[in-house]
Amino acid sequence: MHAPFPGAVSFPAMIRLICADLDGTLIGSQGAVHPATWSAAARARDAGVRIAVCSGNRQYVESLIRG
Image 1 (cartoon, rainbow, N blue to C red):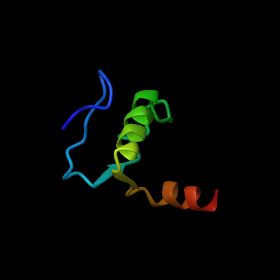
Image 2 (cartoon, one colour):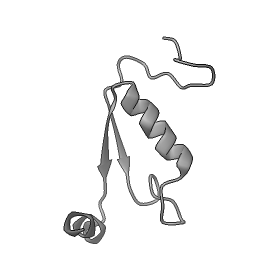
Image 3 (tube, helix red, strand yellow):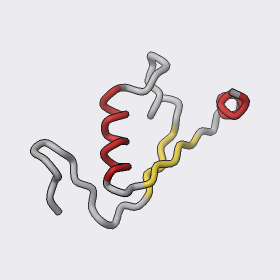
Image 4 (spheres, rainbow, N blue to C red):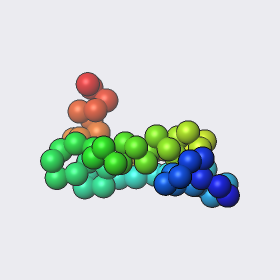
């Protein structure tokens, strides 16, 4: 597997889905997604990997659904 450019992260062909928790994983202590996390997610997406966000925090999930 080759990285598309120097310094890029390659994703093995076997990775098809990344599931990540929101609170404390994707969303840090500042209440936002870190730019490096956005960048990594974009690279994964560009490599054809699907990304699913998960949360056990019902109130948070409901607030996202309601907008």
